[in-house]
Length: 271
Ligand code: MN
Image (cartoon, rainbow, N blue to C red; front, top):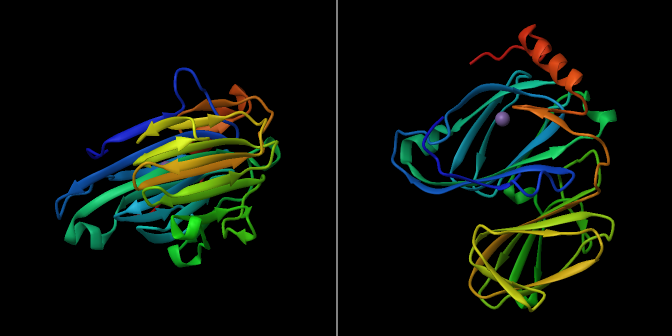
């Protein structure tokens, strides 16, 4: 592990999950010298959920046990299905190592329901230019639709359960009414800036707003230029058993995951 500063707005002591979202890490922003890798995550396994990376700044090279290899640049998204098991590494890209720069991103764990936990692993490498961008408030807000359909724009990410993933960029003063299906759980994470929720309370960077699934919209007004990640999804009403890199329904399935990894059933990673 490198020396990257990581904030963990989810889970917390008070909130175990906002189903189907299990974990949210915000790494950076951090200035990095040429030649040093702040990520340096060597090969490790996952099973039973979808690890997703939203890279805001920098460059990451991904490689896994299913011969997928890819480079993410700022604005790109990697939507991976661990399913029955995958082994992968995440490191700074060659170009980033050569030049250095700022690294910043979000790592999100999206749960899978029991019927898809052992699905074939998959890997969606989504480039920034493939993500539709909506503008609101005469350009005061731009919203990238990564997953789900939002105000007529369809995000490129394929998901197993209904999910909406929006990357919003507010100019100072920008205003948006965010519409969410009533039965979805929802959260908004403020990467930077400051926003006022429902013309009431204001929240600064690194706050996570957690919405109960009892309304269909909320409004955000930016007091300064702000970036907000908005996630919503149909809750998965099943028990969660998790240990390290595995998220299953029962402890027995966790033991099976550990055994299957040791027996090489999650594939072989070759660097
Ligand atoms: Mn990983």
